[in-house]
Image (cartoon, helix red, strand yellow):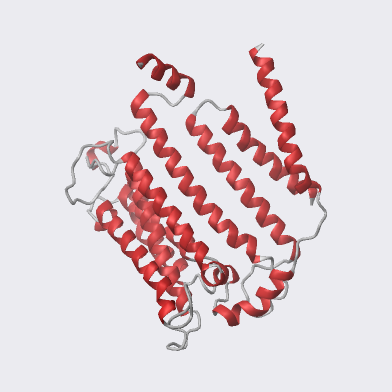
Length: 244
Length: 114
């Protein structure tokens, strides 16, 4: 009885969903080309970025990006607030490392030599690649968010692998970098108001020969913010606040 | 053309049924992620109908895809990550409080405490 009720519910839900989604599946209406053509002709001269996606989310619709970073900030605040009481309360400033001592590795099934060796060697390389993606976001695929996520994975690699204590895996240091980069983002967003180019306008348009300078600046700030906040969340979820 | 949409619809159904049907909290979060990925794929697919090349201007680039859905989906991916992190943190708290990730066991144990 309970099972048939469940099946009836499931069929009902599928029907409702199909009703909502079938117009999308069966639609033969062609995708509008107006915005594509406009961006193809004007995006480079308007914002200076070759990558049109960058010129949208850091040029035309930079306010969206501010909201997005706000969402990320709220999310990391909530996550840390939920997770913070899990461990012991020690606020000492120490770097976090999850690597096992060499004599314990042979007996641990999940943490072998392989993970320790590979992760610690891979960390700096991935960090460099993350900064490359972040800095070249205006002329190639990539940008602040993508580079930031790669930086975050590099920090997780460093936390997993190295026995040497790096400051980069300390949640206090990462949290400070994050809040500082958010402050710089707000300053950069409002500074255009004082230079007669409006909110999120380019305040350094005339002072430089590089036309995409403001987009590069925003990419670096957003990359640092995203990278450090996701790294802080990952380290907190691995139990980094507790030490060991 | 319709085939890809139907495949994405099936992917969305997989995610939706995981959210509705799975008893494990972690599987529910996975379902949320799959649903998110299906929506992202749908937008990218529809935006790519009017061109062949990536939206990066340069020499010899004539027919780019629509960059607007890609910029929108950037937002969607970031917010998906935020939602996943919050949900997993809540799951960790629930596991610490009740010792289980199955929703039936959790509700049973919470009821027996009161």
